[in-house]
Every structure is written in C-alpha cells, then in structure tokens.
Image 1 (cartoon, one colour):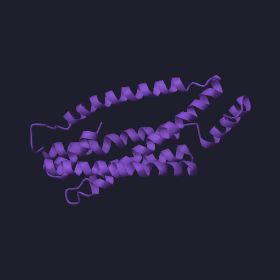
Image 2 (tube, one colour; image 1 turned 90 degrees about the vertical axis):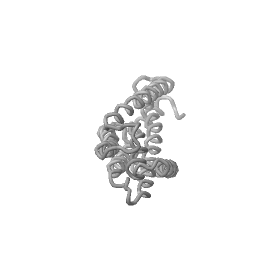
Image 3 (tube, helix red, strand yellow; image 1 turned 120 degrees about the vertical axis):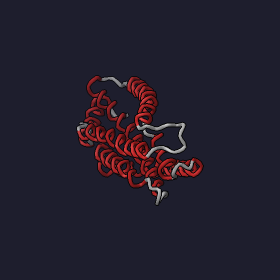
Image 4 (cartoon, one colour; image 1 turned 45 degrees about the vertical axis):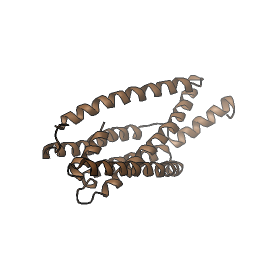
Length: 210
C-alpha cells in the first residue's frame, strides 16, 4: 500500500523534488532492501531455532514497526544515506515474514491432520495462493486511494508541504498499524514449539514417521 509513498518521500522530501537524484536514491534503496532480505533469512532461522517460531516472528514484527515509525527520521534531506538503513530494515523484515509464513503454514497443516485425519496441503496452498492474489489486487487499489488522500498531484514538479507531510505520515503509520494487528494475532497464535512437539508425537504414533 505504501510502496509509492516511500518512492515519493525520497523524490520530493529527501531529494527536494529532483527527479533524477531521487530516482538514483530509489535505485540504491532497492539494493539496500535486497541486502537486508539476504540477511533476514538466516537471521530469522537462527531466532526461530533459539526462541521458537512465534517469538521469532513477534520480534521481527516489532522490528518492522520500529523501522516504519523510524522512517520519519531516517528519510532525511540532511543525511540522505540514512534511508538506506530504512530500506535495508524493511527488506530484512519482509524476507523474515515470508520465511515464517511458509514454515508456520506447515505447522497448521500438521495441526489440521491431527483433527481431520487428512493431509490437505493442496487445499491450504490453494487457499493461501488465492488470498495472496486477492490481497495483491486490493493493495494496488488501496495504494492509489492512499496516494490521492495525501493530496499528491502528479502534474506538479513540487508538492506542497502539507502533501509531503501526509506522505511521510502514511509511510510511517499505515504499515505500523498493520504490523500491530499482526503482532496481536501472533501473540494469540496457539501453535507454540511445545504444542507442535506434542502434535508431532501424536501424529507419529498414529501413522509413523514421515
């Protein structure tokens, strides 16, 4: 939803409306996000083995909230290189979320097998795929609404102070609010490491090891 807001914050706030400079910085921020994502995968793997998946995911979400709120200061005309820290952190959080998503899906399938006596990976994968496609379409629609709500005018080479402020607030607050909802869901997620150990033992007693 806020991908465009990040790009426009760089162009119109950090680069002062200089399209060429802003585009250059956005390119480097893509590199920063890639580096962060590469680092995020082994890091979340270590955390999940050490603390369990739920706690590792909660830490990742908390870090994500801190990064998005921190964009208010990390996007700085005075210190433009700080936005690379923001993009790297966002890339790290995103990669870790996707790793946990797949891993915890497998736990849900084991839990489902325990109660239904069926392996339904296909149904879960189809459901997950549909949700991802639907959410992608919805976020594309919402991103346009959010951008319009900031007062952004594509015909203007320079945006108003109010518009830039609204863009920066949206970049900081919208993802933070979504991640806060995710954090609450994770805190109530019942498939802890201990519970999954019990489920695994019950399944193996019923049908043997796989």
